Amino acid sequence: MTGQQARQAEQTIHAGGEWHPAVSGATREILDPADALPFAVVAEGDEKDTDLAVAAAHRAFDGGRGEWSLTPVAERAALLRRVADLLVRDREKLGLLESRDAGKTVEEGRVDIDCVADAFRYFADLVAAEGPGRVVDAGSTDIHSVVVHEPVGVCALITPWNYPLLQASWKIAPALAAGNTFVVKPSEITPLTTIALIELLVEAGLPAGVANIVTGPGHSVGARLAEHPDVDLVSFTGGLVSGTKVAQTAAPTVKKVALELGGKNPNVVFADACATDEAFDTAVDQALNAAFIHSGQVCSAGARLIVEESVRDRFVAELARRAQKIRLGRGTAEGVECGPLVSEQQRAKVEAYVESALEEGAVLRSGGKRPEPSADRPESGYFYEPTVLDHCHREMRVVREEVFGPVLTVETFRTEDEAVALANDTEYGLAGAVWTADAGRARRVAGRLRHGTVWINDFHPYLPQAEWGGFGKSGVGRELGPAGLAEYRESKHVYQNLAPKPVRWFAG
Ligand code: NAD
Image (cartoon, rainbow, N blue to C red; front, side, top):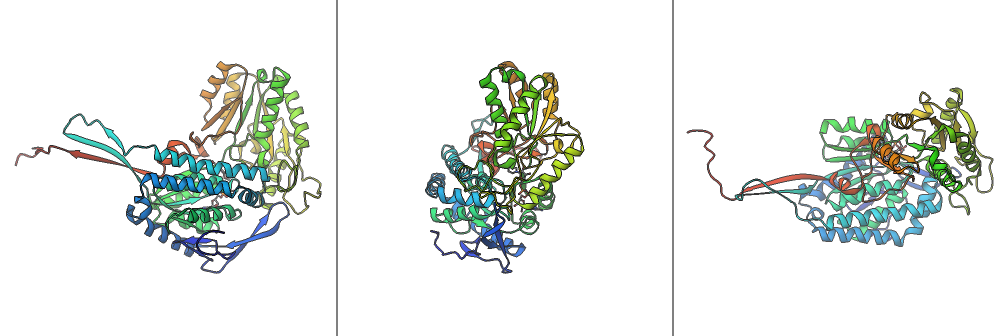
């Protein structure tokens, strides 16, 4: 590590520029999901550690008079770009760490780090290009009226385990670009790359107290952050149940709350998207990728295949054939395409969903079980085979609820209206796709889908310049894009009367 202070293994709490162990002295072992063996140890913080970190962030913000908030925008942008360069320098190391911590392949880990660097560059460019405020026409040359944007204050950033550093960067980069201070709480099971990012922020020259981290569980550290009176904003990414609790816990202090929650994302395939062998191959390949990348532990996973009835049999047969060939194993092993699930608990949840689906009448086309162990796939690892469940319908739990694992359900439709109705029949609304060769239909269907991201003839890409977030119970607010920066700001209207005169509303 290259920060100013040498950090002991369990000193993973950073508050006020210093690395600490937990006040209680408690620690947690971090397990490699590929073999369930511990490979790192971190501090298990609680409310006391959280209070210390919030106090440090509060002091550093100092009501907006802190060093960072007053740093000129060009310098803030330059620091974010330095962080992006450091991420590129450490790409191999961080990609490997993300792979071991979250169970993804090393190549997925590397891609994550590239995307993290992109987020830092994007928000640097966005703030650097802004003017000093928006002049408002007040209808008189005697009035100068301008709307300026100021940092919110102390931001609590709570993140999940599936894309640990990527989700953190979508919060940390805009929070810093806007001039805030923050306390980040990574998932208790995947904190390692977020700790490493804090080291890079220190190395890049961020003033002490601006970037703080508390490692520890949601019920103590996360809940304390949400309720803390000196936290001005809480931005949470995670599941619906925890997100609802965060909103409730935060309500009495009337802080800003942003929630990025789950999804149950439809992938709608019209028959005309399969008209040629090449088009069919692409649609099947992308449906496979939509559902099974990172073992389906993706908020925007295309877990619901909604396919036109006339092509269903051919499409599902080919999909199941390819799903069976996906090479499962330890993310660091050569040639592995898909890693394990993140934890025993997550695999048990997936197994329960598959069991309930089969009881409710789904037909198993592939997977539905743990794979045979092999050299790259220890028996103790949390592996589960990519699973295709045919003949599903909207009343099944597996179709309605977020499984967050390698499970693809298949439903069919006959008309465009039916396809749209099925795709919108979810309490979530994070993302969805439509596959068709008919450009008019593509635009019509995309226009009718109630989801925050809609792909036409594609699945999964996102752009840092474009807002990310959900309709319905997929969340409140947006990350990325200009709106993802606006989350971390307060608007202030400054109205200046250049020629003040009495109002004479009152006669006396
Ligand atoms: P989770 O809700 O269990 O945990 C998320 C974070 O919240 C963790 O850091 C956890 O410790 C913390 N937490 C838990 N209970 C809390 C509480 N009461 N108060 C405060 N913090 C608390 O989610 P997870 O299992 O880590 O992640 C998977 C979920 O994240 C899925 O539902 C997935 O869809 C969602 N997700 C959404 C997006 C998105 O962009 N919308 C991106 C990634 C993941």
